[in-house]
Image (spheres, rainbow, N blue to C red):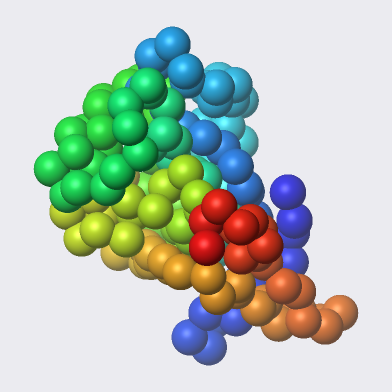
Length: 166
């Protein structure tokens, strides 16, 4: 977790960076362990101007024994199962509250959630958040660079250095 000041379209706000949550669907391979704690943390920030950056692998679309492939229909089915799980749903609602309270939420893709690049998956996630404004999706290999009073901070998931992901 990293806290920094980030400028978003002229607004300066505190930034919270979370990585590798692996929000799941409650199934056998679900490894997310913050179902109680993370929604409580997000609740504390719901009325502050906070930019939450979810730095890759926010969701885990690879938690089953199915062959690795990406189709829109399969991604949509998986996204609906993810947001229907109470643990994942509570986190998304908390993020929605932050966005509605004047904050921002940025989902960056990782190697377990490339599906967030699909507009249909984004729509499912946004609906689970309560359809707030102030939500962005950053998909691809380019890291984010945050400008802080102390200097630039590079926020990268790391899949750029993983041969399998290339």
